Image 1 (cartoon, rainbow, N blue to C red):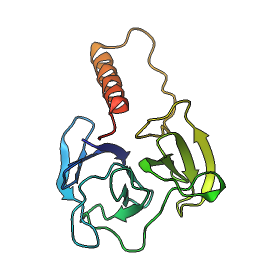
Image 2 (cartoon, one colour):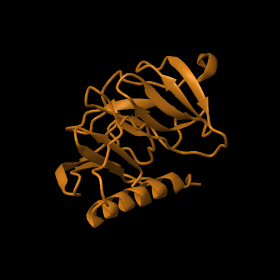
Image 3 (cartoon, rainbow, N blue to C red):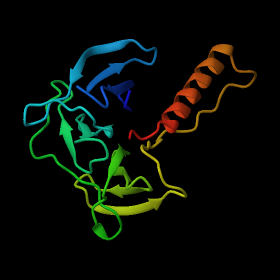
Length: 184
């Protein structure tokens, strides 16, 4: 598994890194696959093999970078997996300079957020115009995720064991994703 994204109540899992072909599969919250596995195809006719940035845009298309730490992202059709012509965007940092590397990407419905140079998160418009820079306290981070969720007030009393199991599994999964080390 190289990356996760969520949209419309489904979890999308991108696999195939680092030797490809990379594919995306949607799952329900209970882990049931939804629809076919989609193989990602470039305009040149090849398949993606080492992309490491993936998000689902408000228009439903997938935004994926061209390769490991490559600061060049294109939209892909979620039904066919084909790259969409003229959709390239690159992450920009302070002053509008291009990020040298970019691995993670996410969006909040109005802006794109990129892991820029493995040491900060930059906010850009969907066209790649710089908005803000948010440096990390230390470097070496490979991916990022925005949480646009709202606070949920649990019912009073002790949580059910099943709820605690789900929470524990989610926290373990997030912890493993955070610890993912950059490939050599």
